[in-house]
Image 1 (spheres, one colour):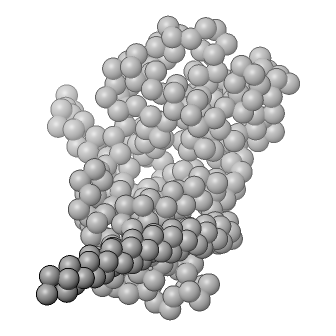
Image 2: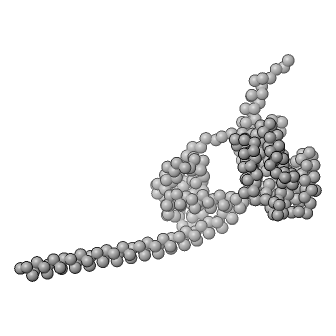
Length: 329
C-alpha cells in the first residue's frame, strides 16, 4: 500500500514537471512567433509607408507637405496602436481615434490634423485596393476655435530692427534685416523665402517658384522695397545663387530661420514672434490701405478666399477702434 502511494506521488510529480516543460515550450514558441510576426508587420508597414510617400509626391505636395502627412501618419500609429484594417470600418477607427481625443498633451488643432492625415492615408489605401471604404471620413473632427491673425504693432517692428543691430555683426545684421523686410513687404511664406533665388527678383515683381501646393506665382513689389533688396544683392553679388544664405554660402535652413526669430523674441520680449506673423502684419496693413481682397489673395497665394477673409475681420476691428476716437472738428 505504501509502495503504491509513493509510486502515485512520483507519477504526479513527473506529470507536473512535464506540464511545466510543455508550458515553457509553448511560451517560448509564442514569443518567437510573435517576434517573427512583429518583424514581418514592421516590414509590411515600412513597405506601405514607402508607397504612401510616392502617393503624396503624385499629389504635388511640397517637401514640407509630404513631411507633414508622413509625420502625422506615423504618430497616429504610434499613439493608437492602429492596424491598417482599422481604416475601413467607422467603429473600429473611432476606437483608435478616441485614443487621440483622450490624449491630454494634444490640443484640438493637433487632434484635427491627425484625423485629416488619417483621411488622406485611407484614400491611399483605397487607391491601392487594400481597403474599400474610408472610415476616417465618417468621423467628425473636434471643434477648433478659429483665432484671428494678430498683426505686430508698429512700435514692435521698430524694436525688432533695433534688436537685430544689437545682436548680430554687420553682415548677419544686414541679412537678417532684409529677411524681416522681405517678410513684411511681400508676405511670402518661410519656405518660399528660403528658396528665393537672385534670378527670381525683378524690377517690379518677384517670382515665387514651387510655393504651397508646388504652385508658382508672381508677387508685385514696391519701388522702395526693390531698391532695398537690389542694394542688398549688390553687396552679396556672386556669393550664392540664393538671396539669403549662411556664412558658408549655403542656402539658409528652416532651423536657422526659426533660430533668428527665437533670438528676436527673447531680445524684444514680444510674446508671439515668428516668421508667419510678419505675413499676418502686412496683410492687415494692405487691407487698411483699401487694397482689394482679390489682390491680397493673389499676393498671399491663398487658394480659398475664406482664408484671406480672416484678415478682413482683423482690419475691421482696427477700423472700429480708430473710429471710436474719430472727430470731425
